[in-house]
Length: 448
Image (cartoon, rainbow, N blue to C red):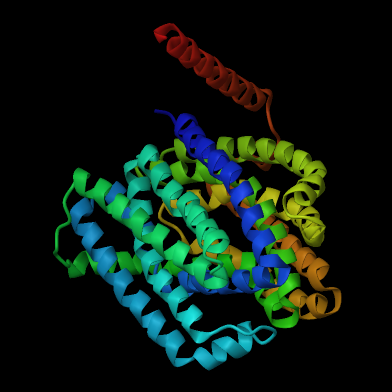
């Protein structure tokens, strides 16, 4: 199965998940209201920052080393799970120890019980293990199992949340219980799929561990910087603004991030595919450039539709109380479009075994975002946060594009400018999928 076909399967899943989540998120947002929704989104920042700072990215490195046949799947599963459990527990202890600081920094404009934060931290440990299995499924390129894993995690989580909110009126505690149940079920499913492929081998090879850490620390640092580039504005918003304004910014950001489902579907398959090629194979650069151009075309088309649809969609689904999130969406669109397409360059750097490049690229934009955040967010609120985040994403994407050009020797003109072949590829692929759909429909009809 080609990269395009596997990417489409992932994207098709994303569309299905998002279509259902539109309904579930509307119910959740209307039930909680802007203030409670803002508090919940602040709570979700804890797993996000835990993932950035507490997860060593051994799971990402595992894809590279498995692709190079350096370790068996069963042994790698054991190693990364043990490490994730250790650091997840360590992060849990750290938060419990500094619970007053967490309350004072993140929730200074809201009242949140400590027990809710502790439950969020339990979810962090489960999420660490879930991320391990998701990357192992990606390595296997088992897109159907990966889709099922995401479906259990996201859709069942939303359904559980609605049950707790509507029928038990559990509010924020219902939300975290829903995440816990869905997270446990998704991990159990993914572990079962991996065990069917190769049983876990309880052996801790120090040599493999040393190689993983040597490779992962670059990914870890790069991941922190990249995460902060995308979400440090949310931290400023949580600190300076009221919970309702946090909801407007984060929900606008989340809606705009939907556009990145297109390149994410491609890059998810691109990284393991590149890691299995020879480092000097010219196909790596060609595949990356083609993926970038196609992603950019699709994202621009989707962005144009989103610009016109976001306001009426928000009004119908969430109500007029949430209309301010449309402003954040519009401002973030340019940065997220370019950033989403340029994610292909990050997969290229990792696939050829040079993740430190992505770290170097991310540092300058991060510094500029912190400076701009201090200046604009306290004065201009949600608009200042959106401008700061979008500007940073644009700068980072342009730098990544230039560095890729210098390393791969592919001319910038060839990287940036779409070709008629790109449009033909998109058109023919869509046409093929439509024909395939109607062929299956006719087959089902004939069977009846």
